[in-house]
Length: 183
Image (cartoon, rainbow, N blue to C red):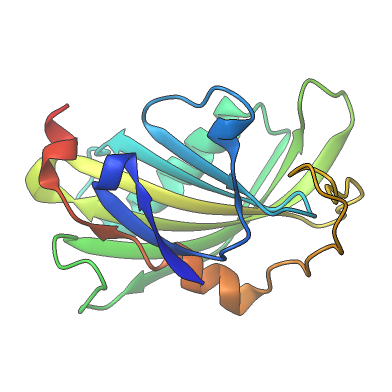
């Protein structure tokens, strides 16, 4: 595990050292950072978003989760748990933080077959900057698409990330430069 700079150093996030930066493989929107597990279909997505207009952080997390599902054309969206975390947060600029888990049934990469994906989502609210940042870890329940050679090497596959590691990743975001919100 290591701190990884995001958005040209504006944030850091603790990630396994073997993750693959998806921007090396395809174009990623400017408000996103995407990292891939080297041998499973698990992924980490960080999104900088406009703050949802609600004072309730748990409701904001639910709304973001549902919006992501609708954007991905999910045929099923189920929220399993919503937990508002208590300060102190790793990031002192964060005004509230919520950890949510849920399921979405989605098709991937223009496929027609849908897959059930467990999503672990940490919502970081930056009320002083009117921004919400989502750290989402996507973990397909039936991962039948191994990526053993995704990074160009035929190495021994890495073990999937477990719930504890996923929570460590999702809850490790730290703001380094508030200037990111003025772009």
